[in-house]
Image (cartoon, rainbow, N blue to C red; front, top):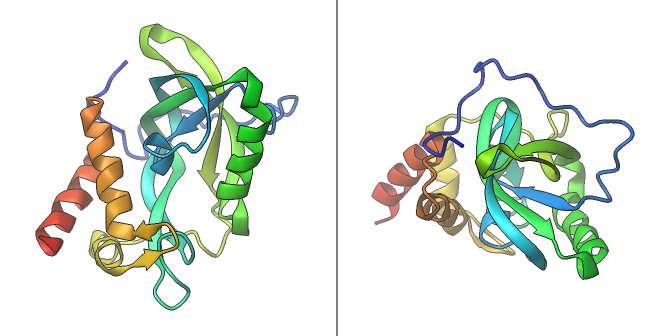
Length: 198
């Protein structure tokens, strides 16, 4: 598995659509690409790096609750179309799988900013699993395409129910780096954020 980049849109990977016979409410695996990497909030039997194709990680979701307010909206990560993304794949613990999925839907699906999908995730050694992932909902009013300057401005100044927007971004970047994953988008934003806030 490649762990030195998350590729940007236009890399030629097909979108990984949900198979209509599969139920995203009944997964064995979950794919985390943002705060789930370091704060999954559920019991799991194992975790490994995993890569999805057809989506890339980017700051594209306006946050008016967890990392911002309606008056001062923050911004959080989403999986958007194109490219690829390396994150963490978690195999849910069998005894608490349903409770974990219920909690994840309550955490991630409020406000319709994400769409639940089962995506093919490539694990080390080439093994593939189907994992629940929360993909950016492009028709949501919270979906935004922002320039780096605006992303950094929001991250440096906003705060919500789960804490400072800056901490969310920095912790995601640092955790991926600790796992040997270099995400250029996160690294670029993270360095600028540190320069502004330090």
